[in-house]
Amino acid sequence: MSTGTSTVATNPIDNVRRGADCAVTALIPCYNEEACIERAYREIAAELEHFTECEILFVDDGSTDTTLEKIKAFAAADERVKFISFARNFGLEAAFSAGFKYARTKWTVQLDADLQSPPAEIHTLLDKALEGYDIVFGIRLNRRDPWLRRMGSIGHQLVAQKLLGIKLPLRASVFRLVRTSVARRIVETNLRSPYFIATAPLVGARYIAVPTKHQARVAGVAKWNAARLISHAMDLWIGFSIRPLALVHLTAVVAATASTVLLALLALGWIGPTAIAVATLLLGSAAFLGLGVLSRYMIPALRVRSELPRFYIRETNIPIDQADDLYGSEQPWVGTAQGRPMS
Image (tube, rainbow, N blue to C red; front, side, top):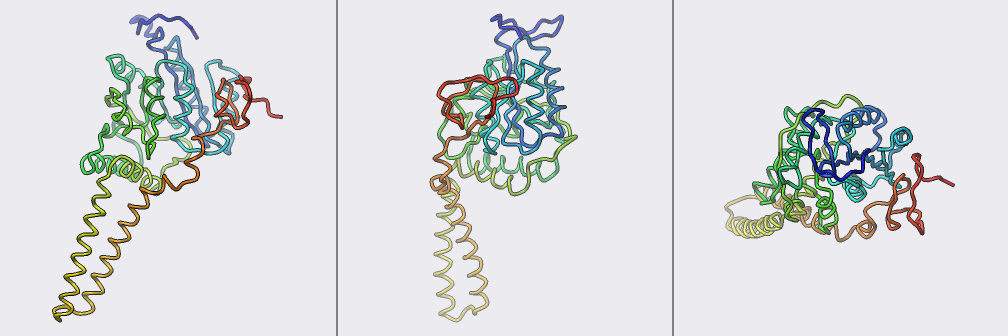
């Protein structure tokens, strides 16, 4: 890998991206991806042959299968491969936060290990970024995900943008190319909810979304399910808007007014016990909904884990900050390609 500082973008003859302005880190968060990690490495490594300055950074989010062992084998054979392995499963947000922190190039492109967004599309994102953008999000063309995932993803973003007034790039995916310095600013923000695409506009990042190809997962198991989609949506709605609180207040006013009217009608004999029972169920449901919304606003302040660092690193083959090291090494260290020598 070259260490030159030329800023020439692309040689039209050999289609090679040269210089620091085109230097790219391929960031791949992974959790139990042993079934597809080898294919991911092969295709990403082949695509990065078009870049003279690049690295591949795997962030293992506490995998319990052989994912980490396979990544270490890649690192032993390819000096471009760097890895970080968490002490436990800290979540996707922590994984890409660590990746952005330790990426060493001007640009970082985030890819999923399942390669549903083909590595060849990195060029599409970079071409647009070089027009003057800090972030280029991919919009999946002919998305090949289950219908629940597709509807849930676009649905919660539409609610956020149209009803709650949250500014975000609609239909943006996690396949994105980010100016690394800007990515660090975004993940360092101390917000209620770590939602990247909604935080980017708040810090003033220049962003755009472009169509990119999408393909079906060919190996492994998707980590998304209905419960995770709902939690993800609530993180966005509650973390970046106070309109749900206004809805709770409005519901309380309507419930109080309706209760007063119903009691008056019951006293006058205009309605019977059955109507009161039905109304009580409806008002009770509204009250519990309001309590649920309020609790979502309170959860971040009550979580003990919010006082802990976002992640701890158990193994890596790159220098890391002492604060991120599970073992609190007194001096920064660089492990072998296989990672920290374990005692």
